[in-house]
Figure (cartoon, rainbow, N blue to C red):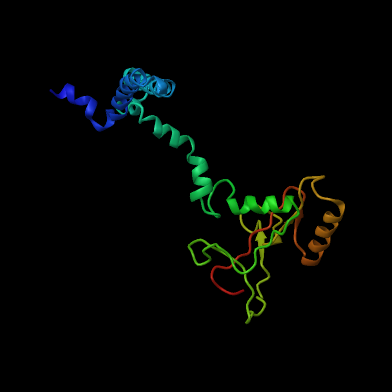
Length: 213
């Protein structure tokens, strides 16, 4: 009969073994009184597991536990330690969010005033897609004659268009920068003839893709 074969199916074997352990260790406890305490403890452990398995069979909250009594708890146990296992055994130095292990280690080193430099190359895939970088060239190109300026308001209803640099120096909110920092920004802005606004820092990224600048 199919019903009689259920205890011997693989998913019910842990519960079957727990019930058999209750009876088996209970009999050994009576047969060998000298080891009675040891066998009694094993019988109680099996009784506890059997109780867990019976509860898993009758509960209706978790299908995994209902289909795999006792053994199904292993899934939730592994799920609970998954972040630790991933962090210490499988996560790469460049993985992780919002900060990679590499960046966290850099913060820890600087907080402890330890050496934070890692010479001799990088672990990043510098030839991968969407990777951008700047590097020196042994054959620099001549300075571009382009003034890198745009005319703002040259079309439309604007009556006073003006020329502005593509690059922009902008200070932080009041109090966020020291007086010396603001003076340095003002001096650089006057040398480069760039517009400067007091709202927020806006430095457009200047990058090169797989080429010398």
